[in-house]
Amino acid sequence: MPCTWITSDLQLRLILTLFFVAECLSAGMEGTKTSNNSMQQLDNGNHSSVSTTSSTERKQSTVTLYAEVKTSLSVLVDTKAVLTCPPVLWPSVLVVTWEIVLRDKPPCFGAYRRDTNQTTRGNCTDKRITWASRPDENPALQVDPVAITHDGNYTCQIVTSDGNFHHEYHLQVLVPPEVTLIQTEKGTAVCKAAAGKPAAQISWTPEGDCDTEQGPYWGDGTVTVQSTCRWGSRHVLNVSCSVSHLAGNKSLSIQLSQGAEIPAHLKNLYITAPIFIILIVVGSIWLLKISGCRKCKLKKTEHTPVVQEDEMEPYASYTEKNNPLYDITNRVKTSQVLQSEVDASPEVTLL
Image (cartoon, rainbow, N blue to C red; front, side, top):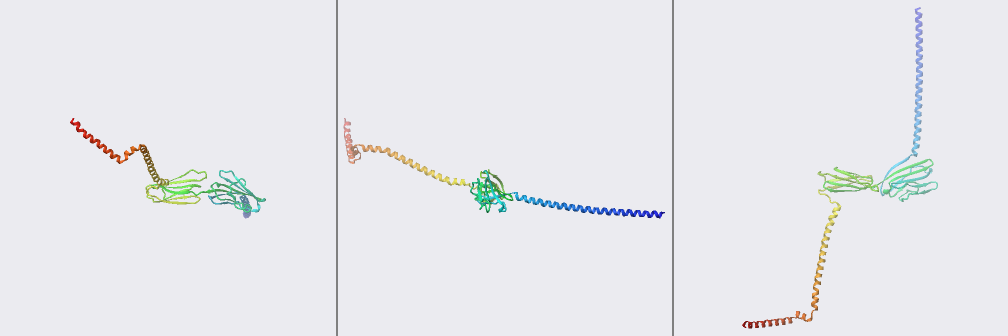
């Protein structure tokens, strides 16, 4: 009896073991399948994501072809500027239009129609803004020569059978400033960048106690920048002023003297002042001579009537005054009268 129970117990344990092994194997198979399914779904998801990304990139690239392109362009005054249109296949071009918006001016338009091979300037009257060449070959625009008034926006629009293409330029005209460097007083120098566009930057070598001022903008957009630098009691002999500008950099040097440099207007005053003094002296002498001559003439006119009266006297008077014989006769008569008076005087005494 006990042997029978043990045998049945062993059979039961074997059956349970086989059952658990079978369950474990089944669970492992399902896990593997689930994992495979998950991996497959993940791969499908990645593929779908890649496909979506590729599609998005294709859409983005397509949109970029129709997007507007903007360019900032700086051009030196009195030079030539050429503005090009977007690169497209020329057989698909229908119309090319240029829109020009200048500062403080209304917009103007110029166009080219390919099917009729006609160009129009619209309300654009500036003869310095023209087509760079034949618009049926190259619709580029040129500005020659560039002036300060040509600051503004220039937009080329090309209409094709595939869509519209834009290229906008923001044109900035550069004007180089006029740079000067002078010494105003002992140990002080002034560097000026006048009438530049845009404003210039000024720096000093060696550095000192510097004060930089920017003046107001003129109507044409130019501005003047002035920098005053002092070195005080420092023993500085040579200084340099460096002007940085988009149109080009410039550097000037000066040797500081013990005394202040005389400004140009004072130099002119020092030159002209002695000349004025000399002219005043010469003019005074000339006036004195004229007044002296007038006095002499007046004196002569005063003596002239006396001479005329003498000339009008009788001939006898003239003879008495100017005839030597008549003078001798008068003298003899005078002596005789005196002698007679002397002879008569004793008689009176005796009486």
